[in-house]
Length: 340
Image 1 (cartoon, rainbow, N blue to C red):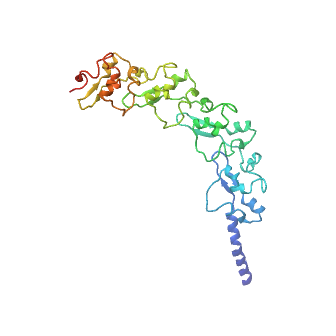
Image 2: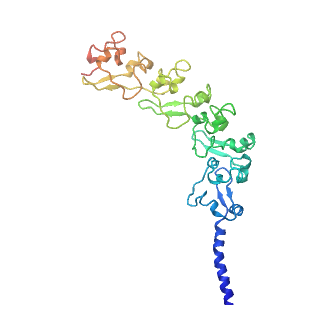
Image 3: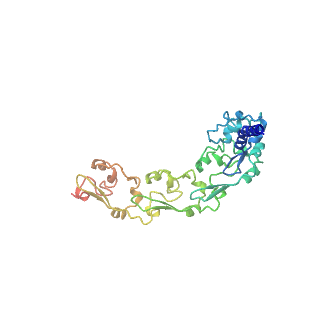
């Protein structure tokens, strides 16, 4: 009786590692953001390889590493792709085999875009047009799984959606905002300008005469933190000056109040060794327009070069008008300008 009990106890102890092993080799779920999880079955694979764990561990799957591989990497024999090449097992690069791992229907993907509403990508709509060929997009080129969010300017150069939405295969991403950004109503943009009132850009007003693609992204990229251009840059055709050139629309270096509402330029004080010089905008605007001086003579930019009296005598700065013809000469009576 004692012999039988000892034998039974020994048998139970021997079977414990097997029970523990069976518990550890459960199915593994790999969660996906926009689709059902991919389930890896240890039972199926162990049965095929005669319970030889070492075929995968740690030669292919390092149990210490938690890294997830992309499909593009699997196609280069990483992770599952080490065996799923089409030789040992079905290929991860075969469109028809996608459903063997990815069960169920892929979900719609929602992209939240600041100031442009929400964009929804429909997998079902695209798959029906592509006849179920997932790899038309998930091919390591169009969608790599590594790239972060790309800008509209990058899409226009063929990135992500722009690989097909180029005006040939499908409608272009350049201009057809409402096709993806449903219900988008672009807001007014207020540009804070030091020394002047804010310039307010109205999308509503401009969209009455122009389409989105006339400006985006050829003139204005869809990206936060882009360079702000000076009035001198605009006078050379940059930013607003691309249209506001005096031909297509009023000139950007004309009437300041058209954009800077309620703007009243103040008096500017220049400190010199011969006493302060005060320039009165009010006095000069009685005889001249903003465009007579800006930006042909004076640029709208801080930190500009200060000219000497010698420079002015040669037509620079104030000397462009104060030449003895248009106005009193700059090399005449000093106390007309300098509070000496």
